[in-house]
Length: 145
Ligand SMILES: [Zn+2]
Ligand SMILES: [Zn+2]
Image (cartoon, rainbow, N blue to C red):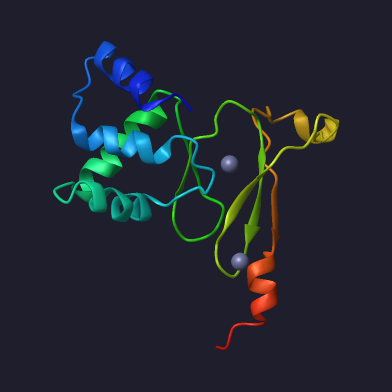
């Protein structure tokens, strides 16, 4: 993902309003590989900028998505995750207990839909999600329910 300064220029070029609130979000997302939810970005942004609203965070994230600077992922954790790592094609490891999402670089060039299914369907993208339990959750043992 681009730096906060680069994104600021990009927003201005497109005639989008640039505010200190938005810059806080850019900074929080830069080099962030934790796939934060919009709500957790909002929480983090509020420590820097107590006046920021959840609506501003949503709007900024959606503007970034429209510009192709972030991807919004639904990996089945119950909330949309913001993924600023759009420079490299990658896939995800998802912990079913804590919802941690980690990037995986792997080559799936050979993963193809068999020809008979392709007759009536054009594949545009492939996303691989590995589901399981992260080490932190595994060492904590099963959650009491
Ligand atoms: Zn976990
Ligand atoms: Zn990712």
